[in-house]
Image (cartoon, one colour):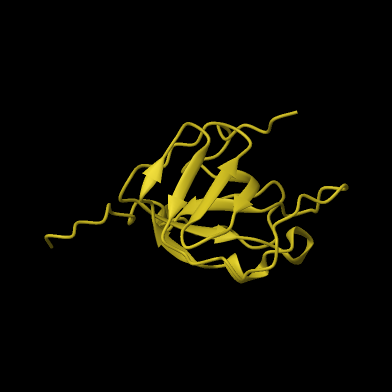
Length: 124
């Protein structure tokens, strides 16, 4: 069963797999709303293995319907896994401006901090 992203705003995307390398390709369980140039952050718990990705921020370089490519060198990271029993806090990606409310079930956002994410502009 795919878990959609439509219940939250700004959207969160549940991570289903991560391809390691000189760049990192993150696949989601449902179509995402991220855009090229957007800064996103990853929340990855110990049950998903790749804890090195937790709390990292990156600029989205490429997108497909279900994936984003970010400039994080993850070649030597611990492999990402989806546990047989889903943890209470699954691995997610969120826009950097998102402030998740700690210990909220279901996960909620602090709307005061949700609108400060700006696309990357290399020209200033």
